[in-house]
Image (cartoon, rainbow over all chains, first blue to last red; front, side, top):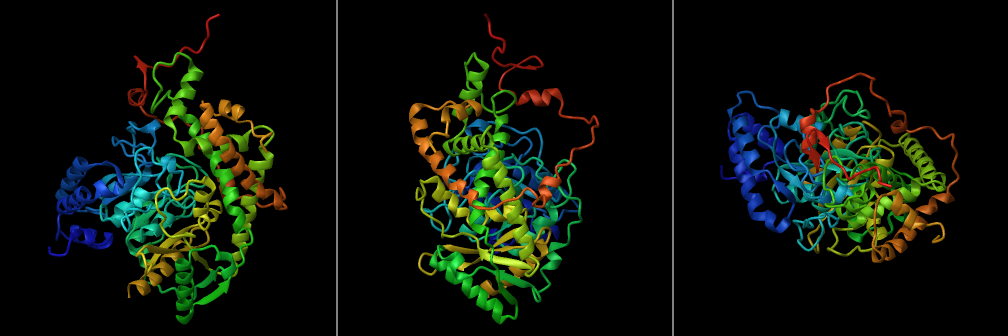
Length: 477
Length: 95
């Protein structure tokens, strides 16, 4: 085949493998070659599962009836458990942890004959927006090696953008799929809370975390969602409603969808390139006959402070399990139990993780609980109510995905400045909504990717796919 | 703000031991973040706001005995073990 295999989309690739026109082994070799060539510079992977991938490819090739994702080389964020394959969360505390079971999403991918090529880098325990907080090394943006790929799913995004995997899975607690997707020119979907099982996802903030796909096309994201979405009795927050045929939905043009947008004053702090791409797209949609309506989300500015109480509070509780007793790193040679706990955690966790644990401990501590956590819980309800009311008059909301373009390494030393990267994304997690980031081209001057976000009411992923597919077609034409 | 922010106490609660230099660096950062999230105090709130779906969905599973991971598998992850036990430093202090 003269056309490089690594340029094919997930849908195209799997179709050729299923029809027997190419072998899964050929696909895997092509991708492993790409990894060998590019990853020493990009550093998307913490673990490359070369041998397992080759073995699996052979098994898939020998199968008569192949699954939906036959031969697809998929990269998995390293906070999603893979049986027998090291899962580190990019933390020293889990550096040598080998899980005894697979996450449900991994089981579902394998059942459809996908092939895992490796585990990707992230900000430690998914806490960050640049992948600079990885305890091991930062990942570079394939579009500009001096810039970050975004985070926390930066490795998952860089791997797909650099054609080291055809698609990947990430997790999104406050924007960790959508922001790196925007920074690396990809489609990134954060599904509705409860749509995809969290069983086997290392918990950061359990009421906000969701697993989702990062892909090169909208169709690929829809295809992956058809495989990973659905009820799982092992996740008590997973919802038992049928998974619609997302790839079929793409064929429906978005006619009739009412699109809510943000007024200029709401996005005055946004990078000029993103702002003009946003308004250009709005006028295109207007010309195409779609109804546009300005929406006034008054509480948007409170979403970030609300998130930075709720997420660290849940994290401080979830991360209490890392005490050096049952798994992970233990500080050696300490004879006192409490001393062992403290030294294990102090040595095992990085600076940002400690900062968030302490912040969460503060928000949950006696005397401050009501003023901080209790209040944030009510703000979250208020914010969710505002979204619900807004969706009475529009079907989707269109916003920028990020306030800025991919930034250079070390540009955001102040934690609050880094937190502001998630300005457009965190509200979606607080309200449990689905949202997609769709690439809309590159900046003229620096050739950096631009992305916009579409938000829908709960379980209306179909609306996201329909509009994103329409936008993608316009961008590619 | 610094009066209410007892970093020493928080470190004890969170089982973290911080060197004085690390404390000196973290304290102003945390105080700044706490002041920043404090802007939520501006909003008028009421307890009667409708509950979130995620708050309602915290269902418990049926109280039924189900198979779990075998002991051997669980022990493989333990940092220190002795026979079929996970070993930890002595919990009971000598007088």
